[in-house]
Length: 80
Image (cartoon, rainbow, N blue to C red; front, side, top):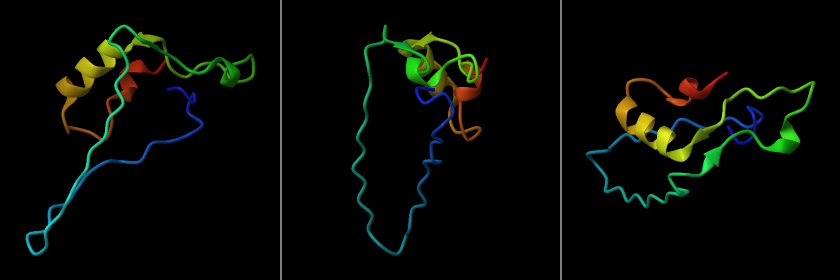
């Protein structure tokens, strides 16, 4: 959303190997639930309109956990 579709995220999935030990070190960046998420101003103009609506991080967080692993992404909910 911040890049207005310029940068694409990779699919984050893991396949557990029963033959070898696996170590995962998850790190997360979570802004305040009241933080407004939207495309960066420098990436939006008359030739490049916003692809995503503004929303609060809380809405994304709740959508993410409600969505589960049904599909690849829950970001479609925020597409204009």
